[in-house]
Length: 614
Image (cartoon, rainbow, N blue to C red; front, side):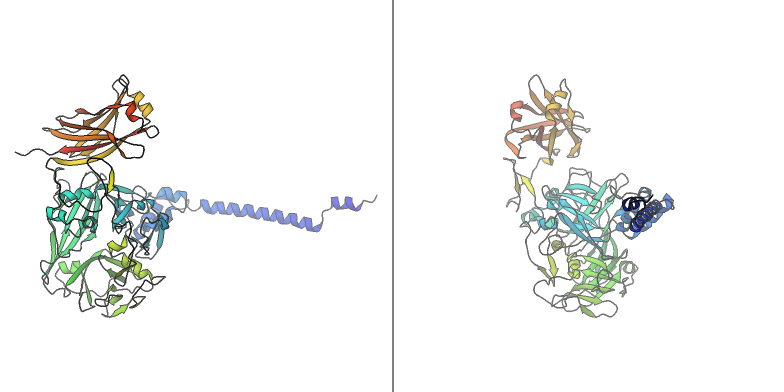
């Protein structure tokens, strides 16, 4: 019996169909093999290497750059678990400090925190030239004062609190407000005071103790003095001594070094300033702290070195002394501090292929960062014509930089060398300007203060915040108050909290310090009278008596202090555990216009009085 053509087509597939099926089978088997191979490759990343060996490799990578260490940890889960996470340790462990990273100024008036940056900041590695972009939105309310070992020294605008920030891990620690230094200034300094005096930082050094306490020291360039504080302190303390005549401090390995010439053309003195150790600080009642006096470590006779203007720089983990002339010569001499200490005044001609950028501070930049950077040279402005150039140490020759002697406006695009040179001038570096051929180009203003930060102060009567542009023409000095602090206490879930505090129960805040004593705030609700009470409790041992003057006020829904509801307290604390009613008049009617959802906020100003003298 013969079969029809249609039946024949059903029983025997065409050659093309069979070929396609074979291709699909081969393709599917190849994909499965590839997937198995890829899975095997991924799983083999961490399995052949023991965890201790991966950890050792990680520390070796970290010795080069933090970014290499982060890349190593990103390889696989096994390597990540075998190495230490830098987040949370970025400030307290010096191994994780981004030492060669510097914030890169954008120019064109685009300061850190500018809306055009979208919350991002760029950083450059001065050894490799690598540039990374990091999201740091907090710069909208902070300004940068300095950078030490890649750690940024910030000031918060609203209350002048000083903060140390690790830009890559986000770790941050808070130090006392910069405004606490005002009480340490002399009447003459206060009369001529501007915030630029305190915000011009010449150098920053900090150390971390075994228990995690950070001790910081900042060199106030315009005052010629050093301020010191820890994360446990409530205020900064000024040194009793001062150094002037262009002291140009340098931070190096947790210490500060500075130059001093007693008179013009006299001998050069080099001092070392160390952070105060345990037991070397005075009590909290005084603004002056006992910083060890600067230690003289080297003296050079007049004319040795031969250049009259000197700088200190760190290069390849050693300190260099740079001498140059600012009037009629382009020549520069570089000496090692270790040689000067041993009375060997011999200039060096090789600095490891690096270039020293000299302005308000000195930066050591590798010649690998950019083709226009010449190794073993000093980059500075021409002493008469004010254009940027290289001075080669080996040959003593002068070579203009990328844009030569060109003046006028900033070329676009501008050479990277001018962005790096701007890093050497803090007043321009943190404001979005660009230091081009000795001039700040362009001269845009930022926040009408050249991004020096803002200070919010509260008036005595209205208790409303207002920006402080200039100090008052007169000086007001308190005779009785030793320390004053302002705290905002929040009662979140107020409707539930008041029902839980019946029968004498209360909620207590965290411990805070004012005037060297520990305090706490307590909250309770009296259902019988329908009133809310706040109590101030002393948690420290008191030898004699402590006078306290306090004031509390509710915050309105807008966040402003109430102009009608406030209460003051003046009392004497004589023992630990003593409590005083801070605000016991507040009824439900008082809170009607002040509850933010179910949250109540009370602002307390606590002043501890001095001990009277005999």
